[in-house]
Length: 345
Image 1 (cartoon, rainbow, N blue to C red):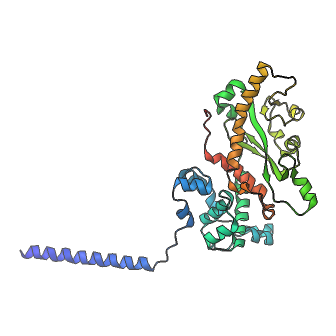
Image 2 (image 1 turned 135 degrees about the vertical axis):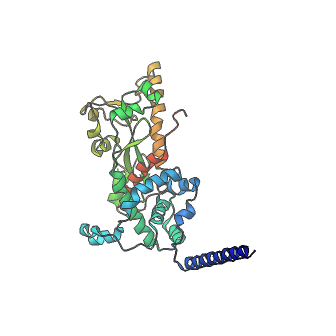
Image 3 (image 1 turned 90 degrees about the vertical axis):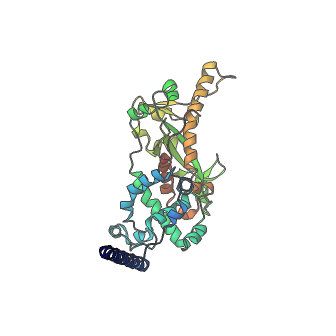
């Protein structure tokens, strides 16, 4: 009985010590300044929210992307500081940020992917409009450097190995599908700039870009944006896509791309719907037109993905004119992260 009492006394003493230790840990924890939860974790806690706020299809895909850029993003220099200091001043990072890095990316995404106005974002993040603008421009340029360095142009062998069956059946040698698209631009006060950016097709001031899409739906070429008055042929000539082509390549495009002579210089061939030269298409021409139309819809769906970034819903403000090329390329390349198309549709 005495031994039992003694063992019980030891057990209860150890238990009291353990409880005291737990209480001490809890007190220390309460005194520790833990970092507050990020706004990203609040607004992007599910795949649906991630798709809405960032255009990435899932948390898994976003995590892969974020882990690939986060190490270099830690050395980001705010655009205003880099502009003041010049190239030499970009060697050192900016002072420690008051906002988590991932929240800065969320701010950029809200501006570009969601298309929110700067005032609304400023209110959500409890910062100034100037801060929103600075973060947006900084991330636009940073992502442009990162995504612009990716080798998105793929080899002829890779194109053929990933080509959908319908392409293999009708046009097995197509290397890329080209198309131009326009985005609305805020009207400038300068009459000269208005004239240069006016698009007869859209009947307003625009910027125009050339996009190249592989038959499998990947964006493989993105040109800079040019003034809206430029022709499809001229933008093809100066965009930089021609040196990428090889003899024997076939390029699919719409009727407006009268670029046969440009392609002949590099040994490539143009595939476009036949022009109507008589009262009625022949049976062969009708079948060819229908086949090209069904296959060209891929590039239209890709452009639809790019323009699902809602910053393009309204005219680009002139305050972003210095970053619009960067944002455009970012949207085009990030469209590749949204996964493959269903080619049976």
